[in-house]
Amino acid sequence: MSTKTQVEWRRRQVFEMGSKGQNQTEIGRALQISESTISRDLDHIRYQSKDNIRKYIDKCLSEEYEKCLVGLNAITKEARNTAANAEDKREKIQALSLAKECYSMKLDLLTNATVVDDAIRFVSSHKTREKLNSSSDGEHDKEESSEPDYDEDKDQLEEEQEE
Image (tube, one colour):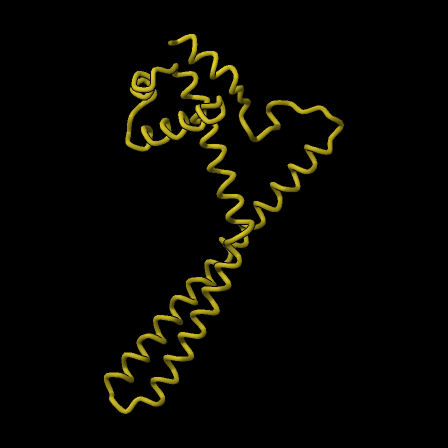
């Protein structure tokens, strides 16, 4: 098994055990690795999680938001048509109730649009900052980087020394 594969496996284990409420000491004992390695793994996992959220907001959220609005409009239209053509009072009331629920959901989406806009703006400004940082004159302080400093070779050496 390659070093990269071993590190990925270990990080999955650290994440899973941490998700189950185990602390770093318990995880270290179970996996026979140091707490500093676990700490670096957790930093990496946090960074990856933030990056995944950023990617989702940037690539998927606005499209999913639009799909919801289009779907609610289609359901509302169908409910209105059903209510208009219904002969049975109960069917008409159910169709109108569905339309009302769709209006309510649509209103919720539209009033929460500021949250979506803020999220998209955040991702856009973050991308702009990353471009500015990467195009700077080559100086790159560790504090400017949003990704923690990892040394997978150091992780592997630590593990081998612990064994």
